[in-house]
Image (cartoon, rainbow, N blue to C red):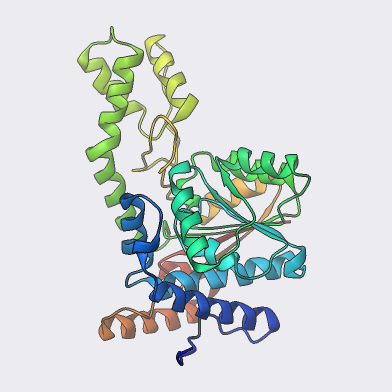
Length: 348
């Protein structure tokens, strides 16, 4: 085997930190030399994997995954071989890959969309990563899967997923009912407290609303209520922004019945797929997350993330390093003003 540089993905020097850093290096080397042509999957998902996880952000992706798994596992206060864990909304990220290398009692893959699973399974097969089971569906499907197989999840991790979950109260309440002692460790770049990240997400919301979701709602309203006039359809499509699943159906029926449609007070610029509710990108404050999580029965920890210092641009890396030092100086409470993402932890 050729000599490889040992990268520092996580600086913790305890046994868990050393293990995760070792496996993170193995994953980084495997993916850096990965031949995507060997994947037995469709071009769409192959291309997504190449551009989002084999490109310039590979180091940061694995670094972030390493931190999530380290911090989440420490909070479980159990050896890895006693922890049942799952990557919720895994897609084709590196979190489930690294998790599958660490020796958990079980480490499962989940995504709401079944289309991701074949490529995820193909990547694992090609790299020798073991995933215990692949679970498709929302949090109800995940907990029902565990209950039907007579185990409880101790750790639910996710990276850039929590902002997409349609109903966060249902998400956290379902986990609490499943296992009140579970740790849910999520990161999201939808950081309301960083003005730059807030403006970026507002831009994305408005862009995807104009390009896709507004028209989707109009088409669905026409199918549901073909007798409505064009002006009524346009008005109703505007009023139902951010509503999905049964909430969307109920709002359309309420409109026809002459009832008032009330939008969520924290919707802001947010939007989503009106049929299944996914890709809703919540842009919530720390207080809003705390309320939702506390109502479910958990306690929340909300901390600042950090900037990627492995860009191809030296100037970007210098700037990111400066920001990271300022985040440390500002501390857990105020560091979120500068951090590109936040860590949202629910525990009991």
